[in-house]
Length: 618
Ligand code: ADP
Image (cartoon, rainbow, N blue to C red; front, side, top):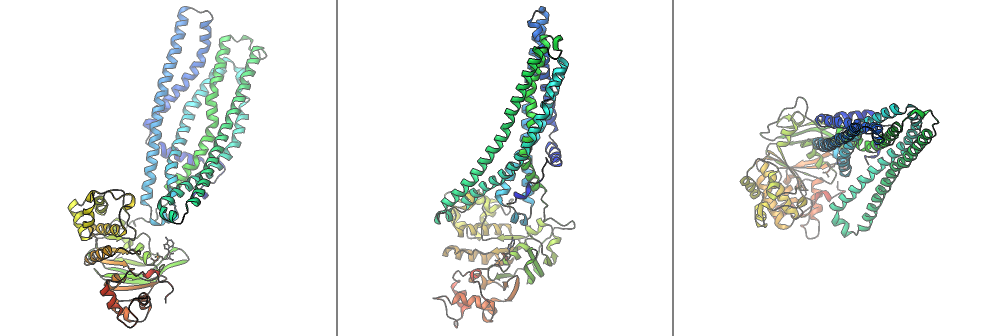
């Protein structure tokens, strides 16, 4: 899991923290400045409360009427100011925090959209989900903790210390002696917290992963009775998170008794010392002592929060780190500086000595050359793993070739902008991805500016109009999550309608391997015959009917073209294609070797034959 390598370093990553403050708070100063000012006021009011204790005691132990009224007004004033500024502080801070979450999530999402396909090969969805949901919240927690700690707690603490020293310098000094002991104890906790947080994040990602796999593979899970196994896996992940959350809470809670005991010690010592006048406090008035003790007790809360600040920041920093890792991940597929928009007129495609590997050392395509004249249809066939999908990936420039070049109408695809290149290509994949939206909008996705009539016209070409019209809400029917209400053949026809609507000069078609119902099969065949007529088409063909309709067939094996030619020639010539072909037709009930398989296949519209499953030939 990608989470594993993210946790490094023994101390708080200060540069990361600075960056978070800079990038997170940037643009939010209009919220943070009032928040910080109101925190200053809260701090000052707290100190003022402690300071006024002397006057309160004086007022209660025989003072003039005007003095008493003055003290009463002062106390009321202090609390009103404190209350109002606390309100301002809470509202502005919450707004700033929510803004941080929203903007970091958008920032991350934009980055994910911009990422190349290669990025998604190495990042699991569950990992991405954990990072996007927790990372942004962690950023908010860290920033707001720091702002609150430094602006409110630190100011309050300093104000109260001033009051303490002003009233009772010696007792104040004595109180401070205990402080280092507390900080030492807290340091020990930090290392543990960091370690546990890291593990908690991987468990959270695991929970999301299990849920994802369950929702996506529910049929497989049910038919193979995998419920118990998944439940056990979920139980382990949930238990791990529970255990770690408890551990974190225990560590955070341990600061409580630590602080309580130390504070109790200080206060009781102060009472004893001042009561028995051990430290020359004899000259202090009861009002001064009261003011000092109040300041001391009030200092406890901000001091506690400040001492725990590191622990709370630490437990969120791992989330921040994971957020920034994604934000920083370089985008591998970008336009060249010199890239220009390509206008594809003819759609002639040239793969010239193309080599490619996903991982260096394991070549996927090897010095491969394919030439496709404008508006021709070619079929790529061959056993699974031969490199057919890879060729499509390269044509759409999801990856760049590692050797040779791919040219469209004479322009190297790397010299074209990605937007214009992809705008010139339609893709109909095996899996039709449908958004949870209406059928109409799903087709329109390929050309958002098109009118309803254009969408319907495209659906007619794709032979999808009839089944759509029969649905209760017609084109407005929601497709359900990823089109689960639709059959495979219907989904594929929607996908073809999309391609028709886009009207791109190049069509890439990865034919469905799974058998379609006879009607769908026929309708799709008719639709394809129509839409491939005027565009350059590359088909990964699994069905004989498609193969036979191509202008040219390329047989791929281990990243090389081992045979190519017109369908009728290849059927006759001994070689890989004929072997594949005869394997299909040697099946019981099929025509025998000496009959004319090409004609038979073409005439029958071909039974679904899956080339890719024919391994071990040649
Ligand atoms: P085909 O479409 O003919 O079945 P592919 O182009 O999908 O073949 O795969 C060609 C080879 O590249 C296979 O060995 C496959 O394992 C490998 N491959 C495909 N996609 C990736 C990827 N994203 N990362 C690494 N290797 C891959």
